[in-house]
Length: 365
RNA sequence: GGAGGGGUUCCCGAGCGGCCAAAGGGAGCAGACUGUAAAUCUGCCGGCGGAGCCUACGAAGGUUCGAAUCCUUCCCCCUCCA
Image (tube, rainbow, N blue to C red; front, side):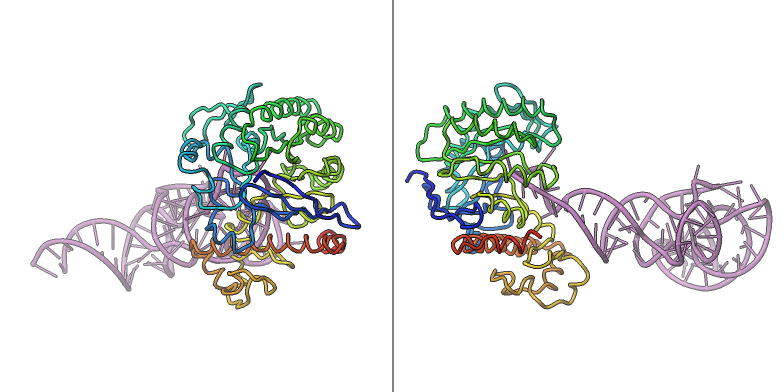
């Protein structure tokens, strides 16, 4: 089964779209959220927990899996799906974000990025061709082009130079792709400059990808800038292709971006915050370590149907967290992922019923 | 009975004449987290609205311009010998 994207319907009052992606490992209802599983695991969850939470697609990472255990090993062991026992679709990030996040450990060269491994300090050159080769070895359903995630702040000139590299690498990734079943997505950069963002769309779209991502946001820029980039650029992307806003975000960010026509998201927020004791609900955010929950017998969220909310009290979850128990991370992550999945279900229902704007009002005042 | 070691802020523990409201842990309290170098990181943590003052280093006296730090007595604790 080849990758495809079908737009089922558009919301009547916003730019939101309801759609369906088909991949070699199953289909995905969009708008969708991908839990982040950088190292071949969504931290603290078993694949069956992910399934139960409603996750349809997850994200893995080229850089991390290349460094450890190595993409060739994973290929020999049957590919990433088999290796990690996740039968559903997987999107792999290219390592472009590590160009940003591992800033001190890498050097950008015209032909690629020279990384000093964060694990043992060894040197590795990640080229666009290599990034595609690794992702094909992993067998990911959706591969991402190697890009430079432009940091914030950056001058117009710096952003322009960075963009030139991203465009050049996008072409090389496109040429390097060999497996027709897998999708390859291009990435729009251009920092906070609208003219460069537009230029990026004009350069990347003609190369011809299976989907388009908006990258280089949520890297420290003010939220209104991120929103305006999303608002201005998402509608410029081809209607018949998946639109993916990389690394976003909070529930309100997601609802906003959906209203601008974005179909896919990924973010560490639900998983990392869960491990750090921040639990999402439809009302308040709950910092589970707070003393106020010491004897609170209620679940995290009475409207949530997750395993954690059905079986455990805030008091118990607080105890587990304070005591440093592993189960705290497991139960907290189950809740936050389910919360995000329920959010996406609410979003899809709203689009289906042409009332996303009403839902949006609940999130963005 | 003899010899030696010790009692420090909630706990452990450093300090051994002024730079000490007292290092460093822990506990406690609060906050952050956006394509994961994150089970991480940050802040607060004797009292009083601040420069400041008050109360604090087993107890009581003393020496000194100044004491958690030196001296005396007392009260506890631990180790070894009898």
